[in-house]
Length: 131
Picture 1 (spheres, one colour):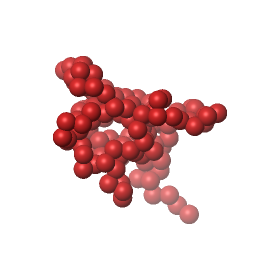
Picture 2: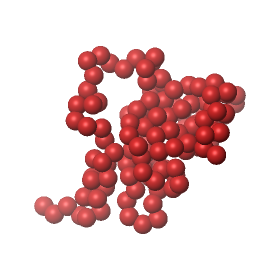
Picture 3: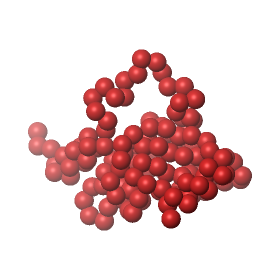
């Protein structure tokens, strides 16, 4: 069976964003203290701001605490090109991946490491780093 070039490129891009073998394995399951929330309902997200290649600030609606998304690895192109997220459950979850938007070809696929609630002061400080 022949693999279409676009699928092969997508698979390579995805693999490049993954941590080294065994880095995802844990002796103990993740707890809320070390990884934050598991999911954010998409209807509660006001907007997102990509801070750097590993950090995304999620501004929430209705005065809720904002969230910080930390990616497992650096995600090339995400700061300047933005990202897309596909879901069937109307939530953004820690187990999801984000795809960098590219005009041509396939963008990098980047895995989420943590989604953590942050205070307004922390969110504003993050936004300042973006410039």
